[in-house]
Length: 104
Image (tube, rainbow, N blue to C red; front, side, top):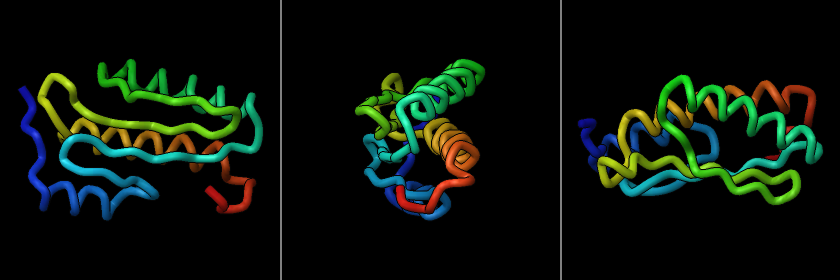
């Protein structure tokens, strides 16, 4: 089983991520996409990446706003898997918003 990160590891991990907040129980990021179809396309890409990792975020869809929450429920908190998934989500969001103003 994977180990839950300690507060120092969490701080270091969050420093390398864009817009994520949280604690050793889980991390969250909300992004704004240019349209509802663009938001759904990001969800589909995140779903594919998560499936390939066999590690899945919680996703809340509110029109063109997406909130991602990463936590390894089986481990009871945040693990390195969550940080890796968050980095993948960041890459997907960056690709989807490359031509948009940095306002998310």
